[in-house]
Length: 254
Image 1 (cartoon, rainbow, N blue to C red):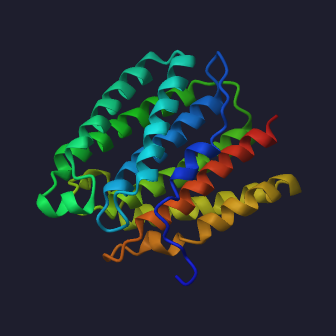
Image 2: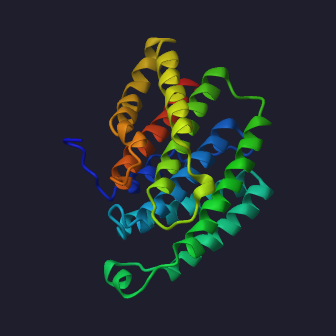
């Protein structure tokens, strides 16, 4: 894809873009922020170690560490004890990745145990998302537009992480790999959501213009699972789209 810059620092932008607000009571926006952070953190960890991309970029590591801190702070402020407990397990799994090579030099000296050290991160993230989805479903103050935007953001987050898992060789996370048909179906749902939401009014259309372009730019790579992987670039653009949609939900429901 000509002109596509597969930069390793893309995910470092994600945490900085997230809105730094949380209410005392659980809210749809707070839970959504945590869902997006969860996808970003897990995907960013995989990008950091993925030999099929540009691994070991320090900015990627800093981004997922900052994301974990933000997640733990939000869970505490929202008093979500089950989420906090799972985040403790996720934090432990993230810390264990220190056992993996942290540079190209170290990688050449050993055969990394990706399944041992990274699969627990993926598994814990899946449990975290299940908990957050359950909390979101129990919220009764989410407006219809807000809920639709959050659903769109979550769909993109799932495609984002699904691509990172599929692109990672020797991970052993086959149960989390999306099938070709699942990718096609979810992609169509994303496209339909962009079209339907943008047709509601000019304000929505304007705020969704950038994330729609960011989603479209690497979109073809989602269907290219033949080994020509581009985890850094796909991660950057899908991540930016996901978080800009979250920002749009805030702007449109003030």
